[in-house]
Length: 113
Length: 110
Image 1: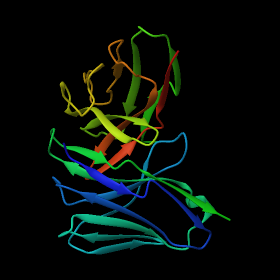
Image 2: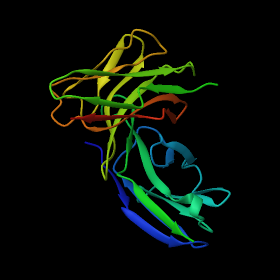
Image 3: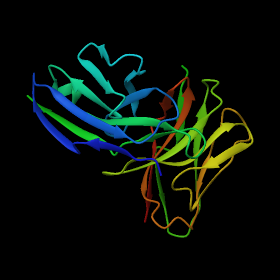
């Protein structure tokens, strides 16, 4: 069974600090690696994604770094804000049971003001 | 507005009862998915459908059933065979490489 290992499970960062969340995978069906953001009681929404023809992608305060040889990718949130407090999931496309997106267990981020 | 509509948002059921969760999309997506979310467990795949009249089991399909009679609709039935059905259920549809999620349905078994 495809494993997607995400760490840490929870993270507390002061306002203005950097939040870093890591994800490791075994195999992937498609070279497309997304991060989703979820607020309490809501469905997840795509935050940022990367295709590994590049090693890094930046959108505003959010950056994905990708290491294909290590099968790892990470999310960096610069200048973290209280509004960033949410649960973050990495995900990987798998062919294991057809074509489906398999998620990590999530990281709960709390940004203190 | 285009999107995915899940209903009901909250649902209570007694043990031994079947319950059906609705998922409708107007995004014209072929593929649809059902995930279950429990605290600390992430999102686990229950069933998915790549096209009308076809669906496949995910990692935790036992105790669940689905149908895909229309492109827009992918209902999930939680049967009495599901031993621990209390959870947050999320429906999604797929564009190129990306999943779009509904707002979820929270099922509580009393």
